[in-house]
Amino acid sequence: MTHDAQPDTAEHGHDHGPGHDHDHGHSHGGRGGKIGAALREVFAPHSHDASDSIDGALESSTAGIRAVKISLFALGATSVAQLVIVLISGSVALLADTIHNFSDALTAIPLWIAFALGTKAATRRYTYGFGRAEDIAGLFVIAMITLSAIIAGIESIRRLINPVPVQHVGWVAAAGLVGFIGNELVAVYRIRVGRRIGSAALVADGLHARTDGFTSLAVLVGAGGVALGFPLADPIIGLLITVAILAVLRGAVRDIFRRLMDGVDPGLVDAAEAALAAEPGVTEVRSVKMRWIGHRLHADAELDIDPATSLADAHRIAHEAEHTLTHAVPKLSSALVHAYPANNPTHY
Image 1 (cartoon, rainbow, N blue to C red):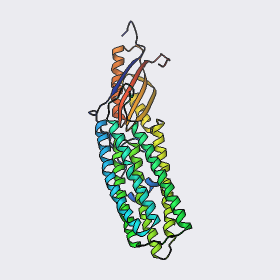
Image 2 (cartoon, one colour; image 1 turned 90 degrees about the horizontal axis):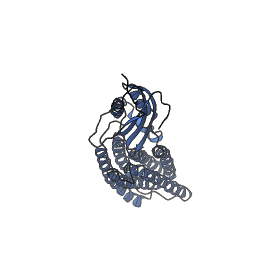
Image 3 (spheres, rainbow, N blue to C red; image 1 turned 30 degrees about the vertical axis):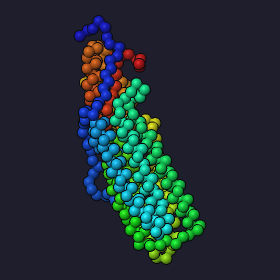
Image 4 (spheres, rainbow, N blue to C red; image 1 turned 120 degrees about the vertical axis):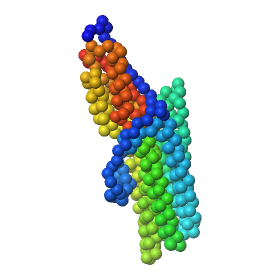
């Protein structure tokens, strides 16, 4: 079949609204080793850009707002209960844990604002929408984790130099247990929702809460040391809490700055390239680029097609390739696919 004029390029772009949902669920094995996995998540959390499932943009933002509301209430109640016992007992380890819990609760506020902004429609100035507000909120999460580490470390060193007796050791131990339960429940919820909707900021905040939970258990150890006649156990545990906070800070900084620098999981790019290469009519995949905009992905792809293809068929191939891409890549809400004649070396 011949044509009088061949297309130079054809492209197809699509922005999927809240109604464009696909399920890309996957799991990570059985129930065994959950305790070890939880510990690894605290000190060496893995990147999880390929989210557990995909929801519409509006539904996922609503789920994020619900998560921060619930966690704000839960951590606020936990922190207030611990603060009362701090004032009674004078425990620096519990004070460090309480400060971190308060900061963790406060990080829910900018996340709440960011998720609400993310539901706003794009404008002539913000043509990609307001999803990046979520990454800015992630910077606030990092700032609060850093602040809590500094305060906890300074207070622990001060108490090492000038020890202060700890009163009501039993209450301190009980407060540590309450802190662990409250934080772990919030952490599980935040991380689960964050991964389901693809929010790095919410996952980072969940890991922050999980670290709080394990450091609350450390308060129990400090209280036990004081009860056994070793009063310096309390500030020493405070220093260990500081180290734990710095450990989670490292992972949070990595994940948030990857998002700010448009970093994506290379596995997502591999999956996109494989899906496009297998598409009928595509002779070669020139390039695939992706970026996160909040908790949604955007992709740009360049494809080579047979130069004898008509403009209408080239557009159809680009359209079908874009549809294939949205099924192959979790959280992909928009894509722009360019189709070029295979013998044309020029990129536009």
